[in-house]
Length: 433
Image 1 (cartoon, rainbow, N blue to C red):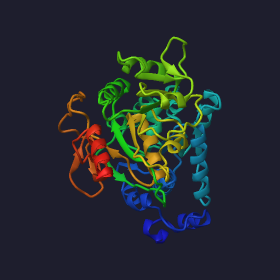
Image 2 (cartoon, helix red, strand yellow):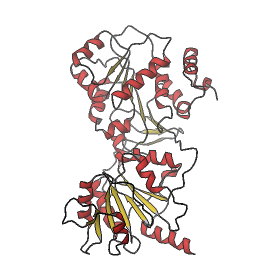
Image 3 (cartoon, rainbow, N blue to C red):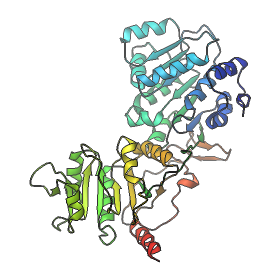
Image 4 (cartoon, rainbow, N blue to C red):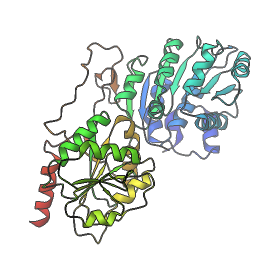
């Protein structure tokens, strides 16, 4: 498929070809016409799927050269490295245009950045906190902004920079809003709801070319740490199913805290690998836990722990996801010689969904989303009706909802109403039938 499908100018097609882009990406095919039409969009696509190139091309197509002092485009990114990469992309694809681009990401003094902006600029690429700081010094004029872009929105939310994003968007007034992210969730929608105007939701999924053979993957989506503890405690009460369990967390302090939260009165049933204090229940060696009949659940910290031999452990819980996906993958790759069935159960908050997405892309398929046990209830705020910021699906249907509402794709929907214990029992029954 040629670049002509994107309806770009001749100069941009030449620049794309020179840069090595010969065919359009799926996200570009789905989003470009809407960007050029001035619509607000939320584009959800994995890393290296072409999100940055998509909005760079859209900006270069729509940007009209004038002598205005105020910028016409503001792009918010998560950090300085990302800002530099975005600026480089603009430079690479705008060789035949006279374009003024400025980066605001905290490497220089505020006064120097204010002076640079006063000379006139077309595009500003900035971290939210730095852009807000310059704006409050009256150095960033948003009165003539045409396009407001949030790049890596899920990462910006994870870093806690929602407030400056919202303040800058509201200060900019009426303009086009483009949000690009690897994953969408409640917290992200809560950030963008105040300024998005009937956005179109565009989703692209890309998985690894080959599927990795992994153990059974189950996913519980939870709102917070406290609910994770409640859910884990509820599941582990079924000692008939969960007869030998390893629970992974990120730090030793979390391991200590969690072990105390879920422990029962039964001596030695719950323990920690290499406890912090001598009087705490635990094991110094992982093999000792495997060999101890009375020890049923072991909490293990990723911090300072070498790769463990999990052979013989039927249930692996990831209470927290490790920062490096390779650590997670090393535990779930299926051992061809193993005779027993293994189930890996992951707990993920909104802020961890980005890591889940990267894992799913690596293994080549999605995790199965599980229903909540009946005894666990989660209070959710009531949705307000008649929200002006409704999200419109890319298929042209009526608005799917407002604010933080996100209609799940069929592949993400929960398709069963039985708990993990029942599922495990059915798996074992199939195995021995």
